[in-house]
Amino acid sequence: MLRGERRKAVVSVTLVDERQIRALNRHWLGRDALTDVIAFPLSTPGNAVLGDVYICVAAARLQAREFGVPLREELRRLVVHGTLHILGYDHPDGAGRERSTMWRRQEHYVKALA
Image 1 (cartoon, rainbow, N blue to C red):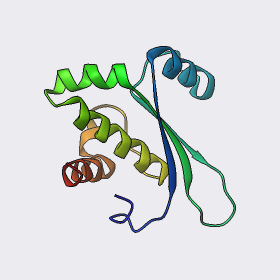
Image 2 (tube, rainbow, N blue to C red):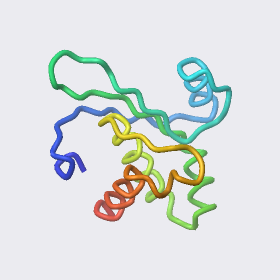
Image 3 (tube, one colour):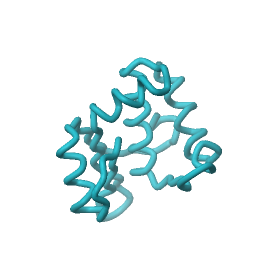
Image 4 (cartoon, helix red, strand yellow):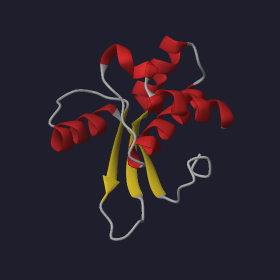
């Protein structure tokens, strides 16, 4: 994926439970809610790209069932999604989310990494 984006980056991925993701969401984003993935780009000198991606496995499991995909695919999707955020991509909330450039890139990489 990083080769496809022609970028170099160091991204850590941490799998967490519902309590942990909710605490991260509340503390850092001010949202007292469960979420599937949170990405934190880290400030660095120069052109280095660093970031942390936190994925809630329970939320991924629910979404995998809802979308009718294997858990492994949904986890892959969330890693790609978080990494794209680290690289500076964003998407709108609501209906336009799945039509956004970021979403199209995400789905391209999810398929390519399968």
